[in-house]
Length: 79
Image 1 (tube, rainbow, N blue to C red):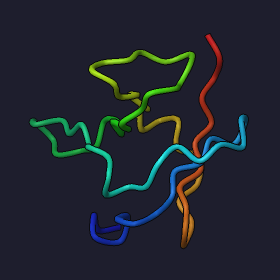
Image 2: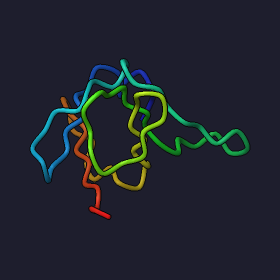
Image 3: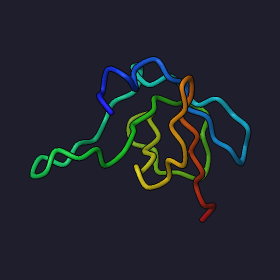
Image 4: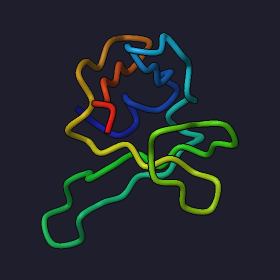
């Protein structure tokens, strides 16, 4: 899948049934040695249970369950 195909998809947390943002308004954390996406960095002001770094939430790539035509479904285990 190309990055351009991901752009514009809504990011939804399946457990909270909450819209977190739109890919394209988020940043990607990319491993420089192999070019793989490590995490989505979603700008946020009101998210709980995750590390905040400068007003953003880091969602590791392994927590993405499904990439559909219109949205990306994530499932993050509570700590």
